[in-house]
Length: 195
Image 1 (tube, helix red, strand yellow):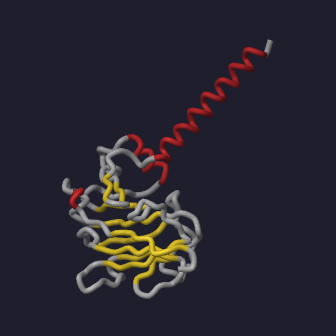
Image 2 (cartoon, rainbow, N blue to C red):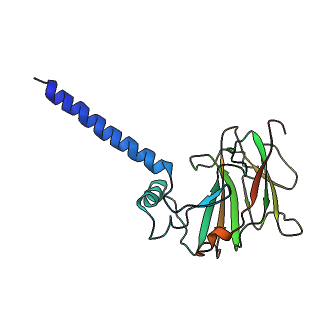
């Protein structure tokens, strides 16, 4: 007597549960379409515009973040170094080179889910274009490590994976169709452990 309704209820729970789960996985898998990859750096220039695809709009709504208009700024993220190995907190990295032209830029590390890692408030967990020291030719040389380094040092905490976010504000690159010609700073692994 209750066998058929019970089987229908189980089928509905599986269908709705599986549908919700697969939708969440699909939304978390990517920010959207139209990615620009420059070495380890990746950006989604149309993610915050009216031309954004449904996945990008869902990410924007789910994260509750203010995204920049195409002429205001552009955020690049890197989850790997130049050799393609995942960025991890127990290794030391060196970020060198030039940033694309921008009035102001920021650099910080986040956990893979986009949340900032917990770090001591006294440590430099973010750098910006006004506070960073540059070489005589104007290029950057930033150490990324758990341990303090001389010069520009970006502190990361924990031994787990992290990603770097470089946000360019008021940059001609954001509205440029020649985005592929940009030169981004390189990320080299120096060593792991107590290096």
